[in-house]
Length: 109
Length: 167
Image (cartoon, rainbow over all chains, first blue to last red; front, side, top):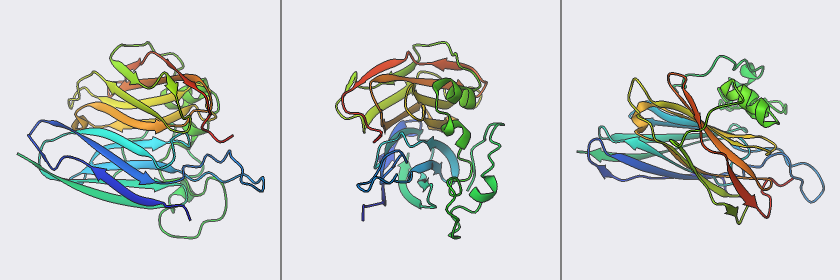
């Protein structure tokens, strides 16, 4: 069975207040479009992550809505202004009720 | 979980079903039944660029601005994973910030590839992701501020030798 889930977040563990930090993430998901066929000629149903929600200390930071046009095992990088120490949490949801979450902490001085 | 502010035309018929998504209840095998609550299905259903633009940003023409920078290879070795970086040179303060950036691939089966929503705490309207492209095509990013000001990147052509949509 193809690997799915296993989200990873990479973010600096320390930053100066006001600094803009980059957050990189990766998760396994087939992101099938629903347009391709298997060997038997049957259409493989669309299976893809539709939303990625990011919070920092439980406040919304950013979120993205995805289509099937995002590549398999989607990578996503974005930025955050480091204001205070705390925890970044990302949640990925796909169209088959799959939900995955991951956290990363940062100390801001 | 808190949802970001959604726009008025999210009258999805799948709302009732989508509300149950993620609760572990066994869903009937209806195509839209498992759509994540709040995912703007109509915007992603559009099959043509102008429909996709009308559904997502209410217009089909946005003036270009050098402040919206789209970085992508001019030739994609692999149409299944084309790295795209978008960044907007614009303040991100509580009063004035880039609220959303929409990424379009003109002739993809789904022209709207992604819709990214920021808050002022994002610090910089920037993201990087990898997209599938069916064939050589134009890619464009449209940014909208919290005040409704819209600007587009210059559309960029990406040459694709092997298409990535699996069709």
